[in-house]
Length: 494
Image (cartoon, rainbow, N blue to C red; front, side, top):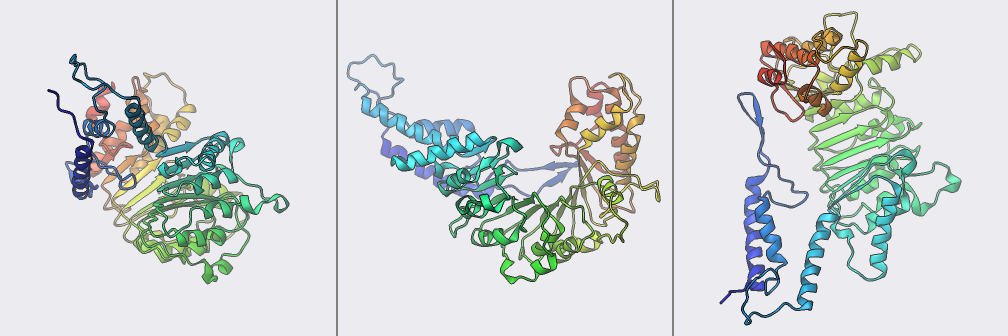
């Protein structure tokens, strides 16, 4: 006689499994990277934001199957007439459970790439509310908005989505909202301030937040109150602005109402102006460790940036400076002459371990034997890691001036880039350096594709040889070491 599974027993088993998962979570959290033979090893990835343990797929399949099981088993092929047939009501109940579970995964991560998608989602959530149906909004954990300029979303649609998504963990707005700057057409109900107000609350679960300022007013005027109410769990904050405010940073910094306390914030990415930096310098961020800066007005030597790094530089472990030396030099050449006072970044950030820069650096003809990774950080005593972005773009730009066949091994066009990377290996500049990482996925494809250009591979062989002389590990975008064997495998004869 066949034994059937009792649903109550299944529920008890699932509860026991949840207790086991909670006990395992402490063992599954990422550990500090360890070094073994130059490799950087990491434990299996675990995301507390999604609250899902790292379990094999086979176990999750069994959990989902048992949670939506029917009695009797619909796939049973028993030929006995003693078996009870399935009922339509039981089928509907099982389908309802499966639908609820499917909604959890369908709405868990929502990526909006055009305005029509935001309007459709807002209409769905409103319709569910009006008709008294269970809302799909609480299932949304991450909302990412990134659209073309002509397909930006309406503020009222985004406000509706945020209103019915109370359990958001990650919210990202990358210039994806359509806002007018003309006051006579502004609607208070659809203003940017009203839109982000839905994110505020003492019960906010936000841990990662990316916001864009669409008005001409400085960021803190409407952002500070919202951040103050939702800052309890915020660990990552990204701020960008589409315009440069005309208000003096000294006037803003003197306003006590703009003070914000972010007790657990660890990473801060800023694409802002010098004025707003003066305000953020006064924010309380005791756990801040990682900062990424892309100046919108190129005023790296302005007082706002100096206030910020003087206040928070000693806490930083990782720093990214987005603009390269060549862009800053080009910008300064178009401006009237003015005294330039660079920030002593190495002195203000003595505990810095990791630095990220761009490959588009510029020769300094006053010192032609040296190419600094960035004008603000020509040297650092304790820096161990340097990551470089956009190497693929630099290779393509240099190669375009000297077209060649795929089998051509003449790597002369890449000589400046070789010298730039070699400059990082000088003992006097970065004596503690241990890792250089190519952060470009496209560069990795150019180097390890089906048929990479011979001069591209030869370029990397030169860089690898110089890193070997200094005993510095060269890594790809994944953090995996680039070796001589890898280069030989793609066809280079050495």
